[in-house]
Structure formats: structure tokens, C-alpha cells
Length: 65
Image (cartoon, rainbow, N blue to C red; front, side):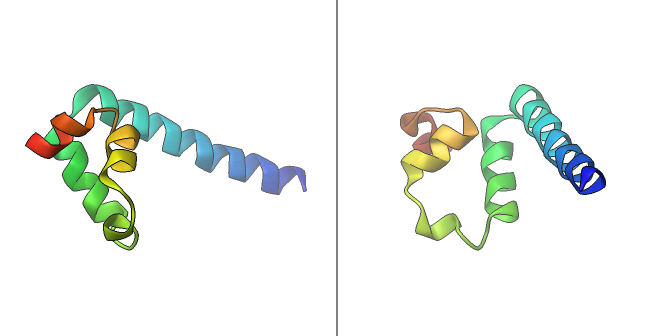
């Protein structure tokens, strides 16, 4: 049980570090395109407001991208 929890926490931490790095060092357009690629299954089913919130931009900024 401890091993499973440690591995799960490691994956979550890795994902969090990747997301923070992406938020700080990539442009809005690159983040949007990356989101489209990674989450292609759900991309067309969620509102753009939620996508904008996830990417850390306003809806107006996202519409310009």
C-alpha cells in the first residue's frame, strides 16, 4: 500500500511540475495547442471558459489565440 501511494504521489508531483513549468515558460498559443493534443478526447466537449481557466488566461485572450 505504501509503495502504491508513493508511486501515485510521484506521478501527481511530476504532472504538477510539468504544468507549472508550462504555465511560466510557454506562450498562450503553445499552451492551447498542447492542450488540444494532450486532451484531444475531451477537447470538443468542454466549454471554452473551462479551457481558458485551465490554461490560466481569460476567455477574451483565448479567443484571440
